[in-house]
Amino acid sequence: MIAFKFLAAGAVAPFTGFRWSRGQWVTAPADRSDVWIHACRLADLPYWLDDELWRMELDSPVHEARYQIASPRGRLLERVEAWDGLLAVAYTHACAWRARDVALPQLAPAVRDAVARAASLEAIRAIDVAPGSLVGAYLADVVKWGQRGLPAMTSYVSAVLASSSGGGLAAFESERAWQARWLAERLRLE
Amino acid sequence: MKLSVPDLSCRELVEIVTDYLEARLSVEDRTRFELHLGYCEWCRTYLRQMRQVRDATGELTEESLAPEAKNALLAAFRDWKRGSGGEKP
Image (cartoon, rainbow over all chains, first blue to last red; front, side):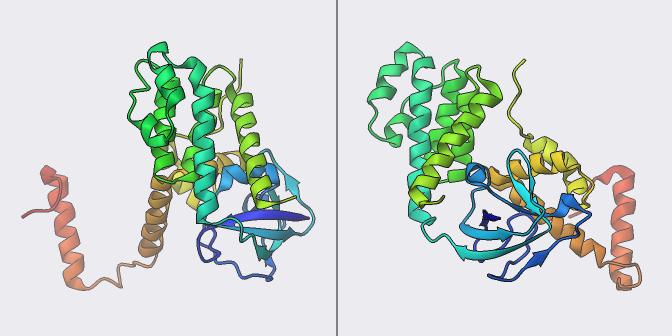
């Protein structure tokens, strides 16, 4: 099965520190599914963002879980070069602006117009969007992380913001699905 | 009742980091742990530090300690027990 994997710079697994080599099969114990090799379907991409994105091949069996897939054997095929610093910034900003749109109807009337008119994240940052409002507080966080260019944090808080207006997990996952479509489109992944 | 977002707080992560490092978490808890790491740079740094501590202390044996280092450690622990709390000037 062809899947995707985010890695830290230098093809290093972000949590274990394992260094991957392109093309080389890596094997985990077949009877220890808790330590199998994890990878992403397209829909899983926003949950696992990191410096490098790789296309990878997973051997059978492949276990499909809610936010990732896992297999006892896998290898890196090639790096998806389109995922770079520029695209990460574009993604971060896209998430922040979408969070602004989701938040707008729930902001206090006194700040809603100013936020709607803001032409930059900096302009939103200058507005006190959070007086007594949870959604406003999340929006302030999204804008802060967006300005700092942190794609994983910005997109995560954007999804939490979407979930906070009563939709819970369904709204969170729906926002993540929007983010996954954005990434797949821009990275031309299928 | 609506399901909540699958996540841990930073505090919860700190409480189970040892179980994570020793592969004692269920697959579900491990996934929640790593989903949190996916966006939280601070907890990634913490995990890295904990792994370094574990690796370093794993190499330490009583025999490998120089006598001066052993005595200094014993003295520090004795002071600590008396309630002085930590390093002395």
